[in-house]
Length: 353
Image 1 (tube, helix red, strand yellow):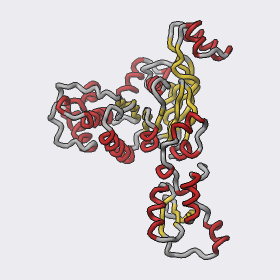
Image 2: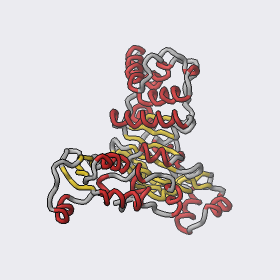
Image 3: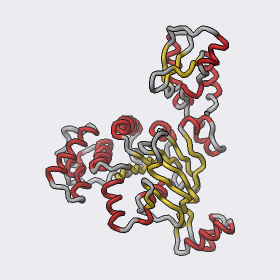
Image 4: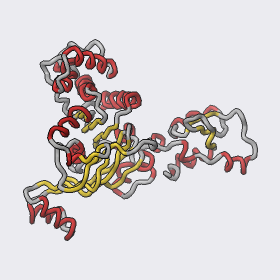
């Protein structure tokens, strides 16, 4: 993910709800008053508390937290559905707060697609008309928008469903249509607020898998909101964990599971298996290191790749009781994993670096 710059930057964003929000924020920042005092003295509620992070181009950045943590409030600042009490939101280095009405409208209509938990489809419009709606709002001609909608139908594997009515579809199908509608205008960014949480677990997992595949194809910069850490670990390149309006930790799924920042995060990650998050590059030793202890490097070693997960490494190593040769994306050998490295990773989870 690292080669491209920040597409979205959130800098010291505060959101305080209430008529006295500025006075309340001043008291919070300068006099350290608590949430309770802000409510009692200023009749103000702190929604987001001094949050900063950046999202890289093409990255899926998950914001994970329980109900009331501020995650949905935060995401609504990105396209200015909510305005921060203080702080900056930059999209491609453009300060969103400086946009006039026309440019803000353009940002919302052309650059950002949104997918919500409730599918918000027009029940008595056909699937293809629902998908084409953002283009209709933009004044695209009927033929062009139906062409675009039919192409997207194929991408989300809904071929043959275009003429059905939205209310005839199952929940999983409706959410596919919701995603297709967000993609129809070919936005640069996707904001997804708990998109799969209303679906039953099997359908949710299936849609997560489809979304991961789709993301690799379309490379949309995505902010993905969820209350489910399993989902964040599956879907996200990086995860920000929120509690009480604050971001407690930001890291890759592996960093969060292996090195939780505090007891709150540790409690969350207890149920997540290290097999699903620890990568080859975290537990391998360098080839030089291995050779200094074992001198000869056999030429019939099984090959794995640096981003392969521990579960796969164990599977591959079962067939041969030999070390694994780790290669990078360019197929260049970069390390070795021995049986003892694997065992240590299972027991200790690697070092998380």
